[in-house]
Length: 363
Length: 272
Image (cartoon, rainbow over the protein chains, first blue to last red):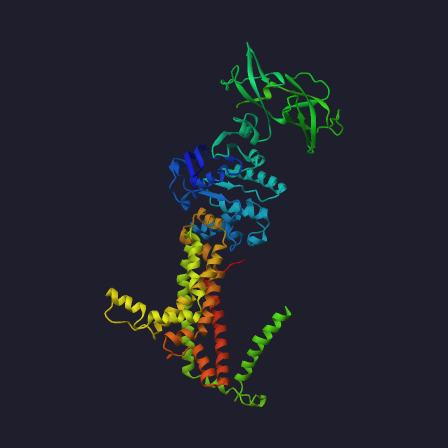
């Protein structure tokens, strides 16, 4: 079990850079997610680690060993493919045993290991079935078993759940977390689905459409303290309001055009946030409190008109237009069967938030 | 459905039944049941006929085996190694077959004859001092058979290889296999239906081939096809020809079944 280190990776396809200046360390034993929109090069990055692609610049280390020029079949890295890539002419057992047979492992050992791993992924009833007799979820498990039976240093997963339905996906996510916990293998999980990434990852890297890493952190850090407006709006949804910082003595405020002055908390790690600087204020929809009556204890307050209401079951989403014509998004938990107040279309509502729940971003 | 069935009955099954019936007649001039006999079959047990079957079987077997030996690497390179110009190369491969088969064979005739292109080319280069006798030899027959049947082998293998999902190879490498292991454990079994299709597309017509041996082999050595045409067209001994045809057909069927089994054990068989 060793860490992966990517140093200054660059990859160009047809003269267009897909990845540029990628520096990333994935510690051993971590469940790491690569999250990004399609075209962000996250799959390419995974394929570089696996060895399917060669980097144009930079180096890849597995532990202390430089594996940049090590061929695919000599890397102690295994991949779970998006379309599973199972061998259609082999049954479940032979698919899983493939890697071990290639390594000339003893027959009894192969049998032992394969059966044990198939039990781990709950396929013990399907050992001798052919691949096309299995459901999508079962095929997914075969692909997983086929990779982990080789006890790789790193397991790469390329959008492994993309083809499954929501319920099964949620179930498999939990199983993946349990499996990683048990094996302690480094998992690198590529996805464009933020829900999957936030669920499984110990830490994650967010990639933008230019093939750069925008932020690396725990799911909570990424969600609560996004480092850029891209991260803020790509992971979860957010409201971005542009304003100018106004400092008067110890009091920090932000002036938003046609809305007025609002109290602002400036954290110590943002020294650039000074008087007169234009900033973006990111507020998550659930950080707002909306009411038709007046509430006490909030540092900031606005008034708006309800534009639209979308009922999601566990929460309701409101679009509320502000006096300066911008529209903000607000989530309210549906905590009660019979809410104290019904908010309806075109209602005038009070919008509250705490200044600490705001993330300041550079424009 | 019905027209196709009628067509089959009229032009395939009826003639077949007729051939089988005729083969049991003593004399075609008296198309009566009382005239039945096994005479033509017992006549066929002579070594000369066994030799002809042996010769045709070996021509068919070696043509298809050599075709396979050349076509498999060709298909492999077309599918896996060549990225650009693949369609152009495929086009060039089948281009000669836009010409009529007979024209093709005649073209080879002019290439291989004593004063032909090949000989004058080699003479001019000084590689040989007097023209080689290639025409009217077994070598010429095998060479041209190989050339004529090659595309029938390449195409099915190419298409069965091309259908294999590329990520399956990546998976094989990912699991530690090298190129050779991937070829034998993954590519061969997954293209084995293409191999068998190609093999029999060559083997079956090659077994009955008579144009190439006639024109390029000098027509002195008899093959199954040549004897059948000889019996039917030259000596007009139709009932005899019919008996020979029937036995040849049975030999072919048995050979195909046996070879099919052999190829399945060599190249593996697909479960799907």
